Length: 264
Image 1 (spheres, rainbow, N blue to C red):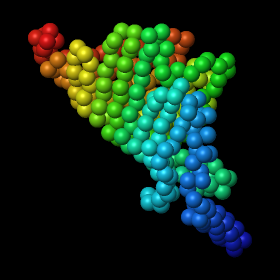
Image 2: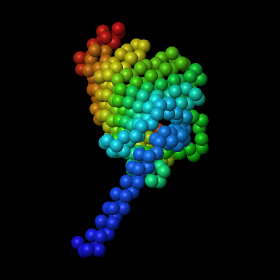
Image 3: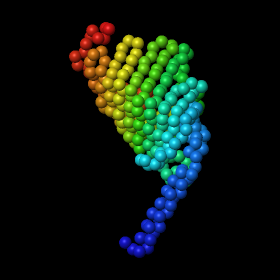
Image 4: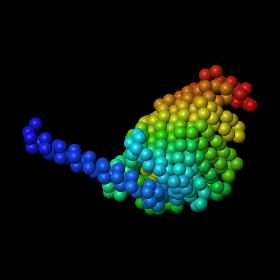
């Protein structure tokens, strides 16, 4: 290696180290809560719904630089759609120099997702259609959710269900920017989902486990297992969103199915 090349590499590495030092200094000597309005505005624009952070923001350095947001709410028409006790966002140091926050990893603790369908058939998460509306790009290393609950209520039919004790891990979730109506065509990931209990008016299930991967508009739920009606079932689901109309192929088996449990 030539002497000039060594000098160049040393200078380059020193410059990068200086940038990181400056970024860390900015974080240390800046009140993290000063970022709250910007975070709320950016997230609200991305979701198309109101995002509110009621708790304080915290900063940590292990492992990696991260922001901790407490008591986060996503609302539509004044009603909570998603609430989470804590959201932890690992941040790219260099993005802070550009006064931006670029997330690498996101972890949510104890989120509650509440979906309702009104008497007129409108869902509480639906926002007015906008011609040419686009979805924001997403590119993470990992997205994880722990101890989650999902609540669904249909006021039209009076039906609904609850899902509790769920954990979700997505590796390399990537969403290309594009039209919102084609969001499933632009999504790719690999991941797992596990839920402890599912309750509805007429049946209950438990021990749901799913392993899946998606790309190019096709999501392959390779392994789906669940216990209900006194039987442990297993199978797989292939969901294809690449065409004009979504298509699904479902294979599921329930050995030793107890018919008397179903009649209960």
